[in-house]
Structure formats: C-alpha cells, structure tokens
Length: 288
Image 1 (cartoon, rainbow, N blue to C red):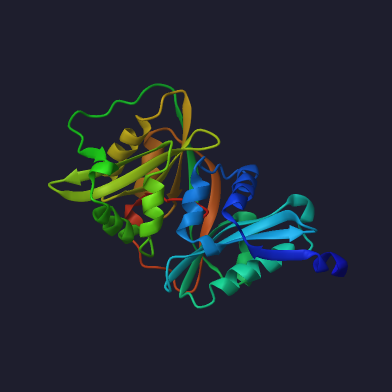
Image 2: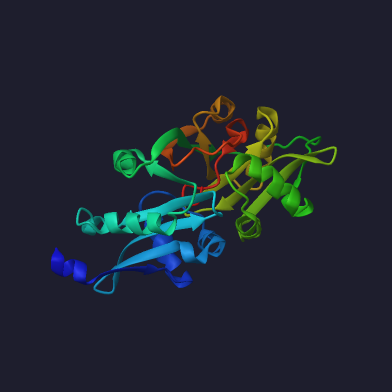
C-alpha cells in the first residue's frame, strides 16, 4: 500500500480529461448528457480533479464552486478494481480542501455511500428519484400554451428565476447549459413574467430533462409536454424529482413514469433556503 501511494497523484483535471470523468459516470449508470463535459468544466475549470496511479487514471472528483456561499461535489468515482485502497478517501479530502471556506457544500449521494458522507459531516436533506418515461407516441401540445423557446427569453430573467430554485447564482453554467448541442429549452411566460423553465438534452440513453422549475403543477406539466414533444418516439425520457415535492411525484404518476434510481441530497453546512415546491426536476446529480 505504501509503495502504491508513492505512485498515486491527484491533480487538477485538464478539459480533455473530462471524457474520463463523464465516461466513468456513464459506467456507473448515471446516464450523462452527450455535451455535459464542456458545460460542466467551463462552470469552474479549477474544480475538477483526476487521480493517477502509475500515470493511469483511476478516479476523479469535482468540487465546483458557485461562490463563497455554495459549492457542489460530484463525479466522485474510483475505478472498481482500485476501491478499498484509500484512493477515494484522498479524493474526497482533496475536494473538501478546495472548498474549505465555502459556507455550504452539497452532493447527491447513492444510498450505499450515505453513511460514508455522514462520517465526513454531510447531513441528508431529501431524496431525489430518477423517473423513466417511455415515449410510445408523439405528445400533443396545447395550441394555447404559453411556452416559448428559451432563446426568446432574456437571460437575466432565466437567471433570476433559477436563483429561486438553486442555492447560488450560476450565470456561467446557464449560458453553457442552454446553448449545448442536442438540447432544447423552453420557458413559460405569462404577461411578460417568467413562471417556469425547463431543459431537455440528449444522453447516452434517451433524453434527460433538467432542470424543470415551475410556479405550479399545471405549468410544470405543460413544460414537460413541450420538452417531450421535441423528442421523436420511441425514446426514453428521464426526470430527477425531489421526493419532498408531492406535485412533482404526481406529475410522474400522471405520465406513467417509473422510478429507476435514487440518490440522497446531502449538505455539509446549512441546508440552503430554496423553493423546493418549484423544483419538479433537478439539473444534474453532478453539479446540483
């Protein structure tokens, strides 16, 4: 073990190495988007780390800062054959050391690792469940819908609305996220006021909606319909819903969606004050 640790190095990841992190996330069943790597990396280029053993990548972690008040840990992965040797502990320590002055740090942990995160000081806040929707036929969108392409909405309005549902301003992230290839984004605009918005993107398997934020269940349903209508059946669509939002769970039920994966949102430090009742789909398990 000592000799192996001598040849073990953790350093900041270069953008070209994001393919390793996203590839490992795919192998873990997280189903990342095809264009996620660039949007994630450009949000905070100094917040991604890669672990090398004898020069070979064996693990990774992200510690993305959204400012002094909030950060998010993700991509916490060690290759299966190298687990249980202390490499993951060092990766976790590297991530937290980078964020040591941050007021609150979030992560989405798989249930099997929850106790380990609790030992590091994280506390569970609520569960997020991934729901799968099998599109068998095109969806019909009401002719009276107030959904409009996000490209027609002032970015500052989207940023202001987003801030109700996310613990920090994330201007850089949203600029990259909304402009990705293989992505569609729509907002609900009523008398000039933005009442919700959502994004759907192509993933390794099917499509994923995230985020889906809305003032109420009716608007969320209409946005869900509009987003799904941009996809040609047969396809799978995925939505990660906070279990503490009963309206979100009703949306999943009304469309016959089935749960396929669960994580626990956890925080080190105070849980942020956000409008969980408006979160019908989180943005991602990797960056919050």
